[in-house]
Length: 223
Image 1 (cartoon, rainbow, N blue to C red):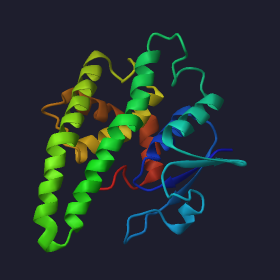
Image 2 (image 1 turned 90 degrees about the vertical axis):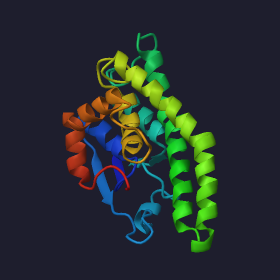
Image 3 (image 1 turned 180 degrees about the vertical axis):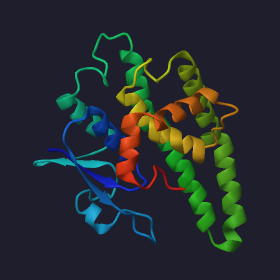
Image 4 (image 1 turned 135 degrees about the vertical axis):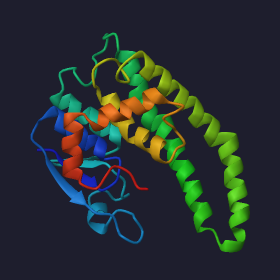
């Protein structure tokens, strides 16, 4: 049986949602972050040495990385409902958004937030210099690339209810966490991107997502 080692306020909410949607038996072990560092505790790192989330165990298999875990689980339990099969009309859209989250969007968000944190933690006298450098980098690099992605997200969600069409797929599950980050800390606003916020509303109201959040009990993202 698959065990999800679920670190609070982390990307593993995606896997918890997936498992709830599939309805197959699984176990979940919850881990709180270290209250001082906000990093994974030692018990979690004993399973995932890098301390990254998500990670699952399944017998002798230990597997990390969101998209690898999603494919591993869907190989065993999906009939094409959550992962369109080769040749399906929405296959290309599915593949694009399934990989956009981890390949483009999430790295930009993570790097942006790391730079912001470095500014906040810089020595007082160095803080203005650090802020100027980070603001310049955001203006020249992170901001324009995120804005381009936001426009593509808004366009895609104007054309269909979900990212790969009018039914839920795993692409929505991996994009969902990143979309929460975009809305809370990434500069995405409802006024500018109404379809993106409509997606977030329908995600938060989706039965299997609600069940996942109830099991999580901590919320999806670090603020």
